Length: 576
Ligand code: ARG
Image 1 (cartoon, helix red, strand yellow):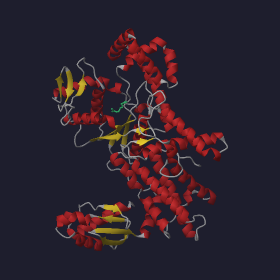
Image 2 (spheres, protein in one colour):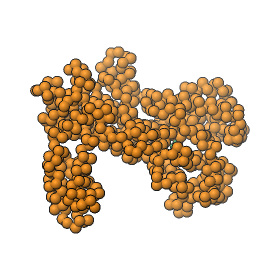
Image 3 (tube, rainbow, N blue to C red):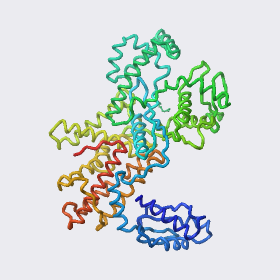
Image 4 (cartoon, rainbow, N blue to C red):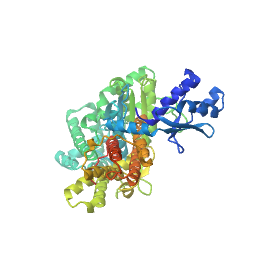
């Protein structure tokens, strides 16, 4: 384990035990990056009360015990009782050499592994993906990749909305314009137009509305012909979704769709169980749960409606059945819902009901990884000219087209140019999303996202291409660069120390489902490499041992960037 912060924490724990006995060894060592040294520890301040001693005295005691080690060069007391910690250069170099030789690049595996369900993307049958789905899809997929890399068993669940009353009017409209004509229209991905046409008829043609309602009843009753018509919408949608997911390099497959209809056979049973346990009660003819702590606008208890007074089930019922299934049947111990913030209260109520029912115990956790808005450049919703939410496919195409213009003059071969533009455009769009904290909103700005400098996808892709070109120019294969790493310049030290933080950065993503922490780490890594490359000639290094050390640092940087971008799901072109 080479992560400096963890290595220091372990040494501090040993020092605490030696100085104050095992009772105090469990104090959090509070190791943080520092402006004045590599790291600082604030543990003396936190212990002062507990030990009833001045913090500077505690800091001096601990510093005295830390000074002499293979890891630490100096430990100095500063200010009211901070301990400034500077690492030994030979330790940093040895760790970097070891990290380069490690296929996992020193990313520790989880022990024990957990079964985690990640509910993400949230598509709906017969609807196109719009800008709102971008983040729930891209962030969820990065979280899935990271958790799997750490060794967890991950169940992907898109919770496809394939059920509900709109299917009545959709099926009737399909019959009106003809099944094949419908299929042909939907095969082009034009779901929105079809949906809007059905909706318009429903609102203006009373006979159509009557037929549509009757069709819903038939669908729910499992009428064979109706189910067949419905399945056609589902199949067309799956094909459409699959296409977008594959363009975006999203790891969801048809087997991961986890459609709402899957839970239909469980809904009656879930309601019966909750009613028998007293978690749900009949209120105004509907079966409702009133989880504690949720109140409506009038201050009264807020219901989660499980069965409407007409006997129908809704979105909430399905989510309650899904959480029971995931915890019970799948045996998941962690549930992550990567879903828009507007569903926060709904999901918290579902979690609360699961807790009341005894399905969600302390042995498991349920988290809402909230997703914020993507807005238009000036704020406000991103819309098409007709006022609908911007389609995801349009954004993807625009990103690729613009990327092609950015790199156009560098490539004559149109095929190669398009191929690189796809990686750059998709990379820019995904990275632009992943580099922002997932719960804050951001404005979609193609010029900024596609810039070759700053915290952007293309900047990181370009950093990898530049490192590859060093090896090409020197006619050295990557695996030949094994070091050892030696530190002769400050910029080498900074880069090596930065690279050692890779494992911690990956782990941070898993903690609260926050890919932007890994994105920030990769940007800092590319920046540290840029400084290193400006200050330290690699192929023209003054000595052979320095040259091979710098090649090793370059190779390690490349491998960390590639591994990190892969975990985020960002494609990387070989050349740029
Ligand atoms: N399909 C839903 C929507 O469009 C999102 C699903 C989110 N996941 C869930 N388990 N409720 O709003």
